[in-house]
Length: 241
Ligand SMILES: [Fe+2]
Ligand SMILES: [Fe+2]
Image (tube, rainbow, N blue to C red):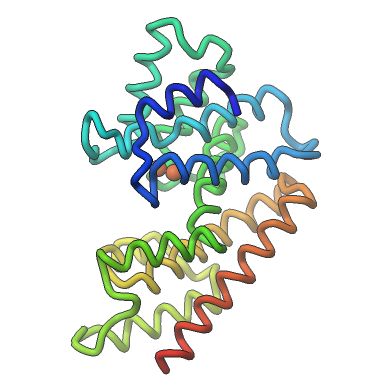
């Protein structure tokens, strides 16, 4: 891992946050390493820029010194620019691209924009999202149970409708829209998990079509999807939803 970026990371990111803290970055970094390995569709400079983007994207999120920010993409860029002003991160290539990717990673993005700069953002969003599926995703989902129920409880008036939507999305990931995010916010773990699963699956298929996925990463993603599918099936079955 890039030593300088790592030092900055440990300065700014809390360890205790299981969802967005330092351990999240370490896991996303591992996914990044698999993603770039033998990936001839991406040039060295972009790989390097992506490394910085992966390591620094959440600096403004769980910052124990500043508390949580509403727009952590913007906050992260502010911190990075501060570091650059102090003479740090000199070797970070394509700085403007890195800022663009980090600033926009919490928001939606446009897959019709095939500029290399936009691909950097899409790579970052997908790698960030690998942590929301598979084993880490399930662990993170369970850690979120404190904040919401595992699935829509019986008292929930829109329970039926919510479970129905979960099943539709789970079986047809391409049906997910940005509206689902809003609808699901503050809802159950199951809904959040399925939303993330479908979101990442859409990006993954898009990048696969664009020829940006290496065989090693493909294998990794297939495993993560398989495990995620098993988790959702188990929850639906166990609780007869
Ligand atoms: Fe983030
Ligand atoms: Fe993240």
